[in-house]
Picture 1 (tube, rainbow, N blue to C red):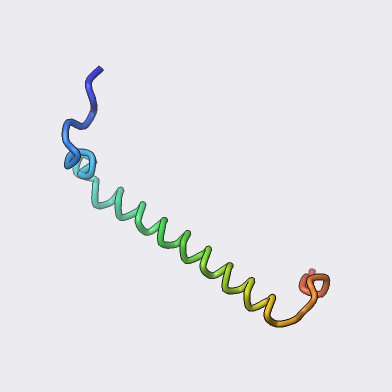
Picture 2 (spheres, one colour):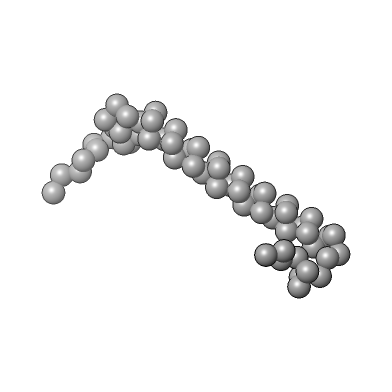
Length: 59
């Protein structure tokens, strides 16, 4: 069995689509990290507001 990529540079280049592949991967990681930070900040703000958990759900 022969490896698909013989060098790490070939792996990162992804057959000429490396910029697209790694750019999409990077944007996805950044957006997921931003979502986690946003949820944590919202949770902390809600806990700091003093509103009891039973009154937090409006629906």
